[in-house]
Amino acid sequence: QVQLVESGGGLVQSGGSLRISCVAPGNIFARYVMGWYRQAPGNQRELVATILSGGRTTYADSVKGRFLISRDNAKNTLYLHMNNLKPEDTAVYYCQADGGLFFDRVYWGQGTQVTVSS
Image (tube, rainbow, N blue to C red; front, side, top):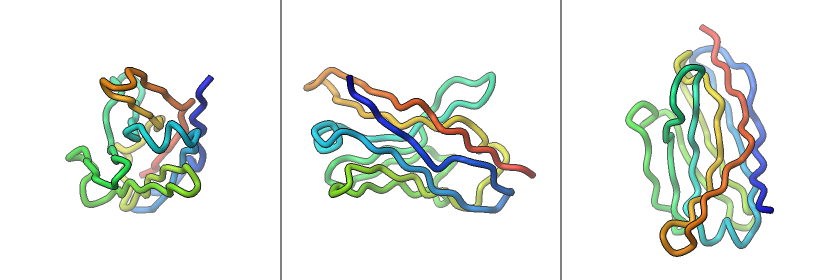
């Protein structure tokens, strides 16, 4: 069973910063598109950012210029650096590994709570 393990969530004041991490199995991390999603209470899960194995990134408009997705291939670890956090960023953040059409598999982590107080 593939496990994606997130860590680093917590409570932070508005304007603050936080970094969350996700460790994935090496064979998954090297071949899959890695991404972060989030889900706030009462809302659907939404894309935050993705990163390809080669480093190309995409971001939701709501986080552009504030969040940075990165990966450490030696550690099989995905990061989301969140700066200038706002109360509307409060959500459970999920790590995703997407195998696309070739692998036809999508894996999710268990989620980590990020709460931004005003």
